[in-house]
Amino acid sequence: MPWKGSRNPYHIWLSEIILQQTRVAQGTAYFNRFIERFPAITDLANANDEEVFKMWEGLGYYNRCRNLLHAARKVRDEFNGIFPKSYEDIIGLKGIGPYSAAAISSFAYDFPIAVVDGNVLRVLARYFGIREQIDTREALQMVNEKAAILLDMQEPAAYNQAIMDLGATVCRPKIPLCDICPLQQKCFAFKHELQAVLPLKKPKLKKRNRYFIYVALQYKDNFLVQKRGSGDVWENLWQFITIETDEMFTKEQLLKVPKIREYLQPGHAQVTSQLLKTQQLTHQTIHGQILCLPIQNKIKLAGFTWKKAEEISKLAFPGLLRPWILHQLSTL
Ligand code: SF4
Image (cartoon, rainbow, N blue to C red):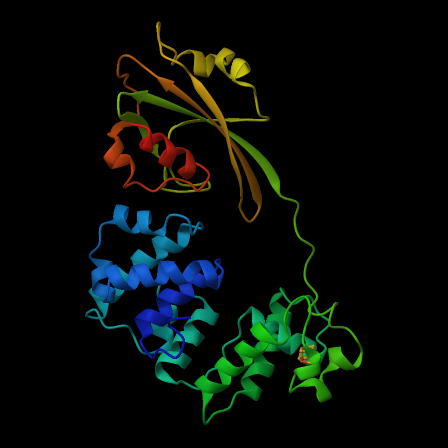
C-alpha cells in the first residue's frame, strides 16, 4: 500500500475514504491517480465536481466522493487548507466516522487512540470470545473499550498498525493462521475452536432485484443524457432515458413498450439492444439493458441535455453503463 507508513493526514484520509468500501488491490490505483492529480488537499477542494466524479468512476458508493469534496472544501475554507489536528475537528469532516478519525489521528499525529477497523474487530471478538452480534452498538462499544485498554500508549501508531495487520494477514476471516499467531495461547476462539463462528454477525438482508431499461437516443455523435437526482442510487451520476421495470424484456417486447415507442422516429436506423453486466450494490442487485435508438432529428426532453461523444467520455456514469459507452464511443 503506497500510503502505508505515511504521516501525511491528507494521504491517510484519502486512502481511508477510498478503502471504506473498496479492496486495497483496486483502491491503490485510484489513490495514486488522485495524489498525482491533486497533490494537496486544496487542489482537490478547487477541482471541478465533474472531474472528481469522473476520477471516482468505478469505485462506486458515490456518497464517498461527495463527502470527499465537501470535506476538502471545508478544510480549505475553515482550516486555511491545513488538515485539522484535533479529533473533534477531524470527525467533524463529512464522511469521517470514529474509525477513520481514529486512524488519521493515530497514523498522522500519533495520538493515543485505538483504531478499530473490521480486522481489529475480528481479532478482538475472537481473542476475547465476544458472543454479541459484532455489528450492534453494544458489541462495538465493548470492543472499543477493550481496544482502548490494550493500546500501547508509548507507540500507539505502531500498535494500531500491528493489530490491523494481524487481522488482515493472520486472523483472516475464513482461514485464520492460528498456528503462527502470537495471540494463540490466550485466544478464546482458538481454545474453544470457535474461529469459524466468531465474530457473530447479523444475518444479511435479502437483496432487492431492480431492472433498468436504458434508452440511448443517438443523433450522429450526440447522446441524450440527464443527471440522476437524489433519493436513490447513483445520485448525481449521468444516465440515458431510464425506465424501471419488473423484469427484463426481449428487444421486440421493448419496442412495443409505449414509453419507448414514443422515441421511435419514422425511418430510424437499426435499433440495437444489449444486456448489461449486473451490478451488485449493498442492498440491491441492478439488472440493466440498453436500447440504442439512432434518430434523425434531435428531440427535446425536459431535464435532459444533448452531449457530444467527447463530453460523454468526461462524465461519470454508473458502472454497468460504462463498458457499453466505451464501446459505443469507439465505433464513432
Ligand atoms: Fe485469530 Fe487464531 Fe490468533 Fe485467535 S489464535 S487471534 S483466532 S489467528
